[in-house]
Length: 495
Figure 1 (cartoon, helix red, strand yellow):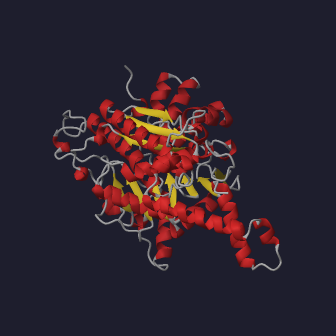
Figure 2 (cartoon, one colour; figure 1 turned 180 degrees about the horizontal axis):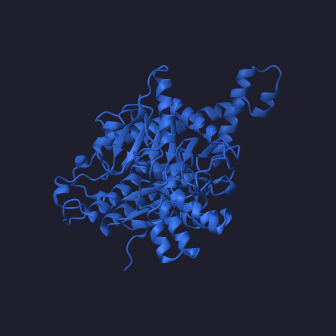
Figure 3 (cartoon, helix red, strand yellow; figure 1 turned 90 degrees about the vertical axis):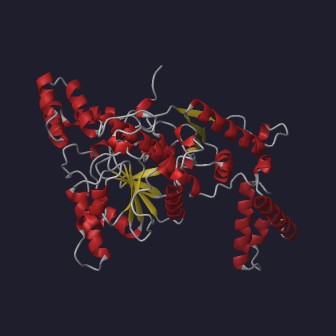
């Protein structure tokens, strides 16, 4: 029996949402059927200790599923403090005030190697001897890349690196969740195209597809700091930025930090001169040109953070519902038995938030001007050889102990992002679909009644709304409102 892929602690089952075609209901209420399906999947997840991801690209079906989950699902994996912080971030996204900064750790959640390991693998493929590979292990990644380019050529080296870091067709669950957020601005430190690929999976009109700045002009965009796999010439493995507008990229990041609340994930708080300078300049601007606060101004690009992901799709652009029955489905577990991370109070005045797998109190002390949300499952006495999250025992500071904690924290990262995505949208496109009446709340049914009354009045007063809009005697504002309502009602199927 094979274990879960990509370092997961639980198997992730992707379940397509079949049997919800509104034209083939045979009188069956799809709202009742949806509630029954979600309940069955939750029980299955608990019984078999797995995670389940319900997948569909149909907006109406997923709106019904997400609405049901929001009303009935109990988030045992997330403490009340984590849920409160998640709702704050979801509200920022809903208001259009959230931007996302994605580090290389997110690609690792699909099983991709880290940056240095990918370069070592390329060196082996290119015929480096065993002794040379051993020497490469002691070098910095940029030095390894420079040696590879000297022996194999730049183009071939980039192609081989992307083969490991951006496998064809690979999309992570976390990328699909991120792409589903009502966010228009993303910054990525890795080369891969997983985020843009996830946003395009279910998009027919391309309106929600994430383009790559500055090569594509789209409403939603991703700034690839180090280049992007879809534009190979933009990639610099050795850190030579002569082939890309590095200064302009820094300006974009500065603008986001000044005008948005930036959510960082896939990072460790460690020294990086470029990002440190950006954050210092932002802090100077915020303080009216005074002294910068160094590390206290935010966080940096730094190393990769995150491990143990999956490859299933999520909400809106690729919408899905996740029922994490397994480890988090233990109803008797104290939800506050997990680190909430950072200060007890989430501050929206700070301009960024870090999702961090393991707690580091000294780093939080250095980087005071950032909200820190720690996702590690907290077990009393964990560092003194106490029980691990799966019930075993470990020796103090063991590597296996830390890896297991990281894997559980990576799973909780996906669940928290799913929670944020769920609470950042209204999910109402199923409300006016007659097939989901059994799923509606009393308020939603009351809304439908008032809308039907309004539609009836419009049709009686202005049977031809197009003619009304073109009438020179009509009020300009009134006709625009009528025209807008008519288009809306036609789109949702009321007329």
